Length: 393
Image (cartoon, rainbow, N blue to C red; front, side):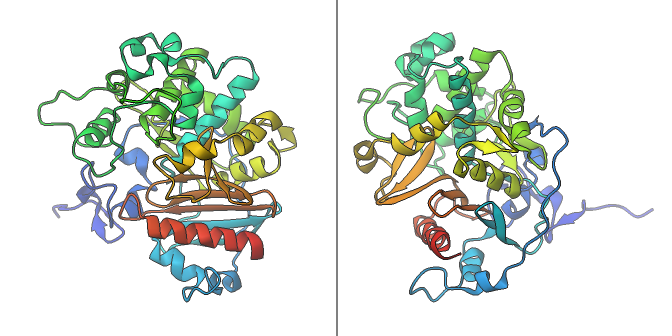
């Protein structure tokens, strides 16, 4: 009898080499970001059967262009350097370029990290339009367990705008606060002591920083996980089911999406959604089309106008992410480019982007498996590429 010494290899290494300690680093992330439900328990965001994927659109001419004026690198060079996995560009509702890295199946879902925040904010906006969510309500009035935390008197709108005063360090490689946070969401190996908290207990243990709520833009992911819990408490419905009913099915998604959950079933609404890049593109197209998809209204014009126009420029300029967008704003968990541009976007670490320019009818979905969680130079280069393609594609 032949003794099996290793499971089937994936991308050149044995599957059993990938675990919770290394799944977010290269080379493993190239595989694991498309197979997150094998790494972390996940719930399904149903599509209702799924529409057919559109036919692939090759565009070697676009991929061979310079990535931006004066650049020596081509579009394809930049995507390769940025460890991109999938890249899709649409213009006025029609895909003009679709590219995937070697080894990526176009049907694969991909972890979109903090684009999850933007998806969650859309669900919150839908509930607001239905009269079920009051953005001025305090978190403590909805989640009583938060009564002794920083969130007790923070409003839902402050969660959405990242203007909560929170004593938390958003350092992705930290072995302290962020590592405990990741253990709470089941993204890291359990601590040897076995005393890890689940998500709600972790969030309800966070305290205020020295300043008051409503001040500078301070990007802190726990705010969006608390938002997911708020939405579940208000509706009595699990977030994956809520997102499916209000957004994913009406959007006409081509496949189910997934969201990671903690041991108690709490959804990682700050960063745990996986979906096909085509469905991410469809979400951006819906917003560029004024909230319409499949011949029906999904998101209100009121919410889109609020998201696009009401970010606080001063709070952004003096906040924690000003280097990301020089003239930017942030509203309802979406970024506005500013500086004369009407483009807006959702973004996640390790190179995830959904870029929308309503003035040129351009939508760009880019998913990646970058080794480093955050690389400002690569982010700037990709944003430059997106702006260039919006003008010229």
